[in-house]
Amino acid sequence: MTATGSGQMTATGSGQMTGTGSGQMTATGGTGFAFEIGARLPGHLGRTGTITTPHGQIRTPAFVAVGTKATVKAVLPESMAALGAQAVLANAYHLYLQPGADVVDGAGGLSRFMNWPGPTFTDSGGFQVMSLGVGFKKVLAMDTAGLENDDVIATGRTRLASVDDDGVTFTSHLDGSRHRFTPEVSMQIQHQLGADVMFAFDELTTLMNTRGYQEQSVERTHAWAARCLAEHQKLTRERAHRPYQALFGVIQGAQYEDLRRSAARGLAELDVNGQRFDGYCIGGALEKSILGTITGWVTSELPEGKPRHMLGISEPDDIFVCIENGADTFDCVSPSRVARNAAVYTRDGRFNVNTAASRRAYEPIDAECDCYTCANYTRAYLHHLFKAKEMLASTLCTIHNERFIVSLVDRIAQSITDQTYEANKAETLGRYYG
RNA sequence: GGCAGGUUGCCCGAGUGGCCAAAGGGAGCAGACUGUAAAUCUGCCGGCAUCGCCUACGUUGGUUCGAACCCAACACCUGCCA
Image (tube, rainbow, N blue to C red):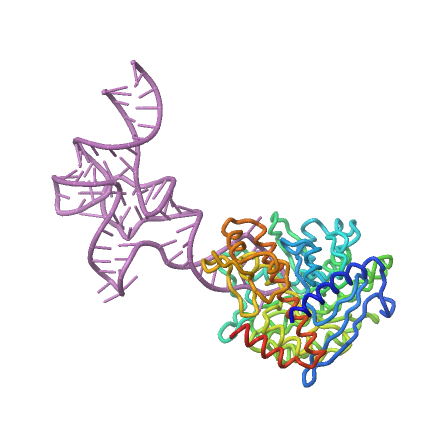
């Protein structure tokens, strides 16, 4: 395991760097974007594959690191490449507010702006419809019983976003200024940001919403998806001198099978003037206990030959269950956010390094981990850095956590190829949650 | 030596008769975080413990039904005068 991990790490890092400068890739139908399926997981919907973008390839399944404001918080792009990260996902809403999409465009696009030569993704701002709106961060829950209520608003929070059928009005959390996002605006921003993969502007509901609201929201997201495709087609023509940017549609529908399936089918069939989605995202309110089932409903409605991205997922059990149900890529803030708050992942579960137990623990976070942090630093030192409020603590723990997830996903990919998936799953989850 | 001010829980610091085991910080201890308003947030934080009891606001004594809060002496610290 360790040998495999470090070997992959090196290959990824160098592959990314060289693939970048040379520009266009292999057979991509003239767009620079393509997806090719590799091995399949017998008895399941899972598969390995390769996504080709103008900025390089992504071997799937893959974890995409979140760098909301064009930076993976606390970590250098070089470190992200060294730990095996294949792609980075930034956020249209945040970059639109600061520094402004035109500034990123002027730099030559997100990749150049942030010095990440590999593939990049941007989220549409759809997540902020929810996180700045009703404000319920909890979109994952074990149990939805008794939660339904469209009027619930998180206590103590000011609502900064409100939705209507045409779009969303935001109040900037930075300066209180008012902004209007529509599917067209999101596409314009994302084209200026210039990521290889863009996401359609969607409405993200929570598990608190009523069935009626979820239906209405799925319809709205579908209508927005069509508008995104139309605007995308127009912008792609206007910006033909720029590298091709792929567009993924986002499937909502919460925990309802009929809604999820019809939403998936609707986007799979959606064709606006010959323009279709290059891939799909599975997002929104996801009930953890049936996460795999939901993923399966959706992927079985989607075309096989296009990649599926899982929005906001990174817990080990969730990753397994999504991959075997046909998800190809993931993104999540968790490894990074949690690291800044002193929580670290290990093969034997997660713990907080800032507790007294690590004060004199002169050993790495995880003896089996091949990351830079575990190779060079002890828990005692990290504990000290957190207590002393030194920012290196965030850097080192983020490197470790990102590597943990990347390496977990890499091992899953390898086990699909090797046909040892079930054994790998049983062992990995048994240890992690045991 | 004279005049004036101060001494509060691990630290800083409110509180000037009962609603005070004592505000608020910090530290400490633990927990949470799933398309990032997050280097954030939550809980505990004198002891034993079920209400409750015990020990506590420099020390000792006093006034009072009742004192961290009022009085006296003492100890130490801090300003101005010699």
